[in-house]
Length: 239
Image 1: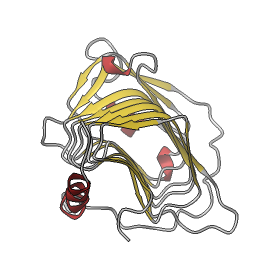
Image 2 (image 1 turned 60 degrees about the vertical axis):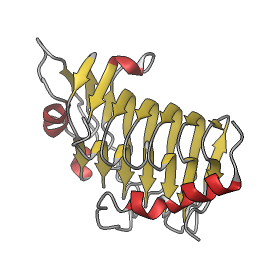
Image 3 (image 1 turned 30 degrees about the vertical axis):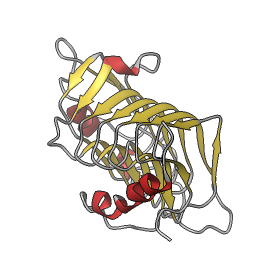
């Protein structure tokens, strides 16, 4: 179906209302990348029955910097928070080959599927997040992140979202049926020696905007598809 300019303009008018549906943590200068932890590292396994943890949040809370949280298949009705330097370099892994087997369900009541704040170089790999009030996957105030092999669906603002962060990767992921954009990178701090972010092999469809940004810097988008959105790519949504 051919989209009219009026429809595209109408989609843009949705932005302030959608953005107002959530609260943001206080933006802080991410500074330099946190040092790598020395280990030894542990793997903490999550599953519905018979593992060390029944919830992802419980495993994340117990994990130390550099640990791995391995999540078995199932539906987890959680809003997982990864907060602070003590959680840097965590690897939270579901099923990278079949992310639809490891689902975070917001039920229209919880804010974010995964929320990472001030924890550098966290990897989230192999999950589906759906029906959240705000975002499927949200990272802020960090230096470095990896959001890969993800599916984000039917959330109130963005599917996969990075804010006020330096460097990072969004890759091999799909995002659809959000109230705003499927993917978003915004408010990148200015840098004398920029650390680039990469958006690679992502697919975004069925959203008002496929990929949106405001004050985005040092980002490469490659090998990706944005289709059947009101607008495909908007490099600066709020001029």
